[in-house]
Image 1: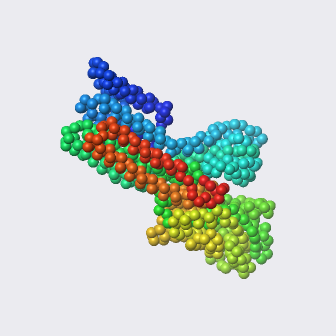
Image 2: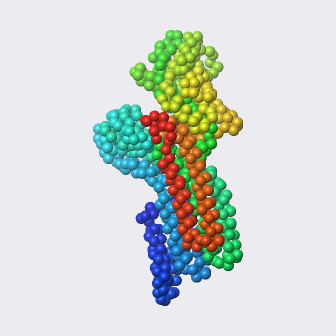
Image 3: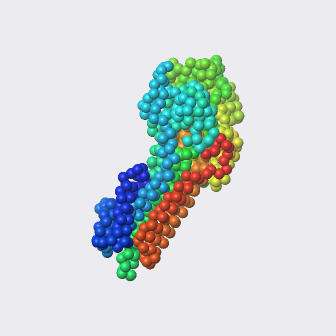
Length: 637
């Protein structure tokens, strides 16, 4: 690709851009020179002067780019075209030089317009976020710029309006159109407690929301960032192209020189130089990556660049965290057992006060139970959270510990009645939470969670894509993890693991040659998300740490979309290989056609641009890649 347009991250509104006007002006000069020469008008030198003016308009920028590349000691494909233009001028073929420079520039502009289609859908998403928001200040309403909204602000979203930020519904109910993000055409009923994403359309009711993420932190903002990253980060397959490109320019120069020396005809050398510009080859990987990331974003799947998506193509093992991933992440306390001399309300008070500032799903279950029991939750002091274990805090001068039995290791065995309750909770698949006061066990809470409805079908669909092993890696106890694994038809179970334990499981499997995709949602999943070949975070429920660490985020926690991710990644890789083959084929035909005299320099420049456009159209087909074997109507992408 001509150096001025060789960076995918540099896009212009070309149809209204000065570049296009200048290019067309140069083309008009070339046409005028051709008409003057064809009609035999006199003096003949006028045609040459007009043609040289055309070269100055369209050709000089190409030559300037080539000189800059040489001075910077980097390979720049401008050199080939620049040499062809200079050779044409030296042999007096001014009209050929003018025509070639116009065709090359207008071809590159056309390629930019076509390749821009790969991100049009993302630009459309960004434009759906309104620029203004209705801010609630007590009972008063005032319209403010959306950029001025801060997390925690209360906003009003009226019927027919789009949400300006990501938020949580406080009051009201409505049908919300989320097709811009999920591709789902049917609106979803939303009410208090449900998330509302920026850019989604409120159809029927008046909604009062609390802003959670604003500006670039919203889902729409993250989409724009991810596509920008995809533009600047090529897949690993691009390394093949880079190795080829390093040898390509010298090889083309050698063939051009050989054609000139062998035939004594400079036109053949010029044709080889023009045809040898490897635009289509250089665009093979980046255009496919941008299109694939854009296609995934339209389905509520945020991917941090083509390289991450490429890694998903080789995955043969998928591991899941349990809570909030395979399960709904909405656990509830279904029973409380207090120690001797205590009551359930006291146990729940201590547990909820210690867990007040924790973000763990089990902590939320405890707080919700306290709310329903109308218990006043007090603020504990010196709260410390230990990932995979639980929390410690000071309350009324006593140390309260809440979590797994290992949290208070060394404090002694549980009393017989608490142990029986704990064993019973495990037997039925619930998660027991032990409460200690000053290192003495005082009670046990039983917490249960429901398995996501789409989990079983998603596991089956993953196996249908060729995934060899699917397992659960959980901090929960063995019985609970095994029940979920058996219910979903999973192959392996690793339970009662701290974060470093999950890390070791992944490292062991990778040492065996496995390619791991890990799906998690919490802070304690961050090390595993980082270590896995591909880390997938549950976007809506996931913590910021998990989202920052992961390679992929599922906006609506829909694991049913994982098989689509794997198929899309494999399709992208196949398309990149096809694009490389297509680029090589077109270049080879054009180069040897020019060397043999079959192609004139002008025809060679046309063929060069046709090859690049074919590669772009091939990549753009990823925008229409459909998901096969959809699990449920409401889960369709």
